[in-house]
Image (tube, rainbow, N blue to C red; front, side, top):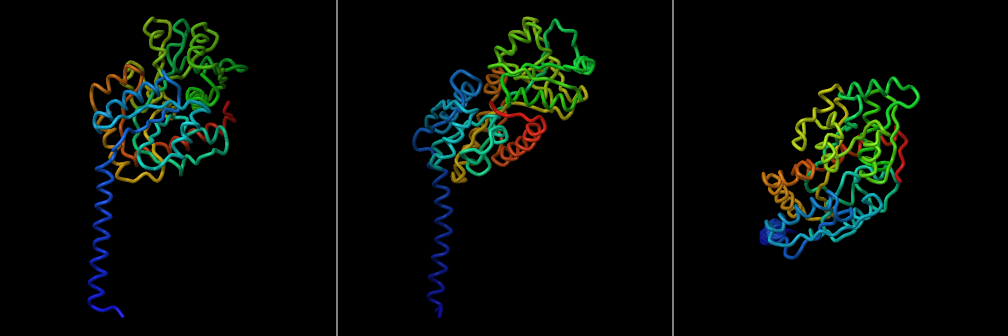
Length: 329
């Protein structure tokens, strides 16, 4: 039988539990980080993922008062880096600088050693790398419609696009373009952007769809021509390029992206604080300009927004992978 005294004691204990729980959550957010944070880049040194990770890490370190140390974990189309963070302690001290292949590796390679939907959680979409449709400046193609007309006229081959590898972002974007344009197409795969550009500059392929960073010197020298960008609005990275939507292809949307993720059980206060600090860093005008120089567009988002973005990417590209019968290399 519950006496009045027992009832009061139980109520007091319950009140303390709620108060302690809220206090503990606040303490987690307030104390973190108390030591350096590891930021895992799933690529090698020198690429846009690594460089932008280091830029972001420096600014996060300044704001949070602890060093963010970038560690490169390249290999297996980002799967090695993804798995390392998925298996790490969920304490906020191991963060993944996830890249666009995060949304496609399961469809390309089959069952993974981690579950991309359950083992990691989204924190903030950091940057996007808009995908541009580029041709040789000596080609007769000055508009997207001219390129498509050429492909439709060639009943046997259609269009040939250079890509930096099977299942890569440029490859998938090109397959989406072929589908939406109703044109036959062949992706010719090379080892990286440099070789793909060599073939395009030599006139041995019709076009490529890729991030603009490594193409800019060739565009500025007049050797390559930009026909459009596969984004919803014109990109500040290269404002002169009209969107493919403006030219009659509204569903051709594609970009590389990088964002922050943590192990799934990471406390919500840490997730929210890291997201808020990343968003603040990426909203800075100087930061936006610095990233634009790399061909990247600063974003900054909430955890919910980034999670919804990744889900949408998985659905869209997995359909393309299945329809085109693409397998990872």
